[in-house]
Image (cartoon, rainbow, N blue to C red; front, side, top):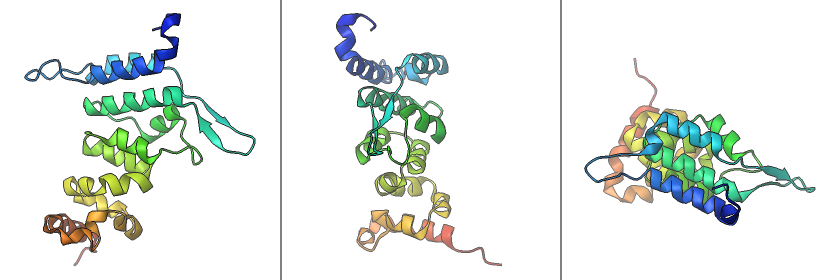
Amino acid sequence: LAYPAFAALHAALLSQLLSRMALPAREEVPFALLGSPEVRRLLRSRLPAVTRSVSSGGVATVDRKYYGVWLTFFHQCWRAGAPLDSAAEVREALQLSERAALSREDVVKLGRDVHVDAMKLLVELAPDHALPLYGFTILREEPAFARGLSAEQLTCIRELTPQGLKDDTHWGVCRSVVRQMLPVLP
């Protein structure tokens, strides 16, 4: 990949390789290279860093060329069942800050076909985008997650609003959330 002819396609090639590494080799034999800690460590050490700059107006911008590669790396690792990085590690790798936060599109890309723990990490990283997208799925799997949410955050979850509760299938999760939010009775 260091060959000069690949320079213009470097980020796209890395993204494609990462995506292919998380795919099963055969349907009956699940295999994902990104499930291996050694492969992840090696890849992570060789991925180009995301750079951030601040304009004279104080607006932070991130070099999108390798930002997308890192998004693909984290997403494919999470899909492969790899242990999650901490929110601090993800923020550092993606150069996230208050001025350069995950966009809704980033959250959608990272949260597609991942397990609940990855969705909870996304809620920690970008609650405004992740709660409406994945909050109900998290609460369905782990109703106790509601204890860490404010009333305002709970109203961001469409399925728990009066409009969302018109669908009878949402009531079971709603009852579980209410049980979690009630104070413990003597």
